[in-house]
Amino acid sequence: MGNKSAKKSGRKSAHKSDSKATAKAASTAAAHAADKAASAALVAVGDTFSVQPIQVDLMAISTEQAKVGPADKDEAASMMADLGERLASLQERLFAQSTAGDPRAVLLVLQGMDTAGKDGVIKAVGGLLNLGGMRLASFKKPTSEELAHDFLWRIEKALPAAGAIGIFNRSHYEDVLIARVHNLVPEEVWSQRYDTINEFEARLTNLGTTVVKCFLHVSKEVQKERLAARLDDPTKFWKFNPADIDERGYWNDYQQAYAAALTKCSTANAPWHVIPADHKWYRNWAVAAVLTEALEKIDPQYPPADFDVEEQKQRLASEV
Image 1 (cartoon, rainbow, N blue to C red):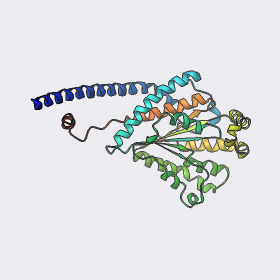
Image 2: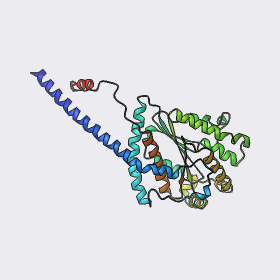
Image 3: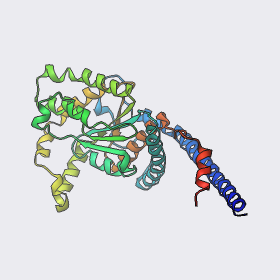
Image 4: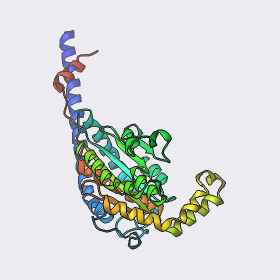
């Protein structure tokens, strides 16, 4: 009698488990389909900001918001919330498939003049991600140890593992930007680095890492306003460096250096995106949208079970 009761109870438990699993699978599939449908609208976002392999003229590219995306701060907040839900699902699937040996990862590269908002993007967009699956790296002035190696040495050490999303606050592009503007190395050295960078990024792509590069395009006028705001707020003194004003004297040189990097290193596999950065709310949305689109193109999938699901259900049902 007791055995019959236990078997009956086990069948009921298994039936309930099957129903829950089926419902969850249906819900997951529906959410996945919704993500893919919504991504269609984002395709235009990447196309809007991506750099074509022609001579880039930053003076001709607006630092204000483009015609796509939110019209104001409130709409941006609503759209960011939607992107957050989609990114959460995509990031989980990216990590999940890595547990089955899938090598794919994502690297978000952020570059821009001082006050363009690299830290702000990391806070806003990185805040939408699960920190457990994200790797953040900031590249400041090279240390003596780093200078003793090839310029890509410190970059290689900070790359995201399979299933992870890496974010670079500045990057290997510093070595064709500040190195060029301030003559830190001879021209024959930095001029050869463009090809080296392209080869490096092509190798990353071939190994499974999607490289998403965003140049935060801020105007000289807005930069001045943001520097002034830091000087007016004691809680932001730590963000200010007198050298920031000195660097403004090299503004045109930096614009030329950035234009060269964008022109020479925007490739089919790793295109640059010029993100209007005069409005923080628009800048944050644009980067989040471009990142979401990149993940949608990967289309990560939950891996199938590597065990007999029915057998494990029966084992669990028989447990007291």
